[in-house]
Length: 126
Image (cartoon, rainbow, N blue to C red; front, side, top):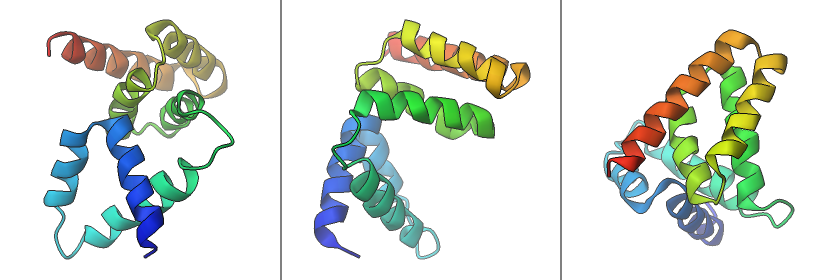
């Protein structure tokens, strides 16, 4: 593991998903899933999200589209919160989800709209 890339990834991961969520995920890691937490932090968040080629806001919108296509509800909800943290608006998220209806299928988009509304409601009540 490259410590500098891991540390950079940890900083980015916390800024996007929230310190509380990330720290809880790392604290709950055991011998079985700790290597996965380290890989995600270093590779995904440090090596890829840490690149200068795209702003975080754009990366968030791309993630929402991909996670909708993959029907990954849990990760999608995390990244809705992250997208809002990265400056995306509800309207921008709505546009991405409408686009996914065409390219990923209406059922996937309907699920994503439902999940996004859950996250919006939860964040508004915090």
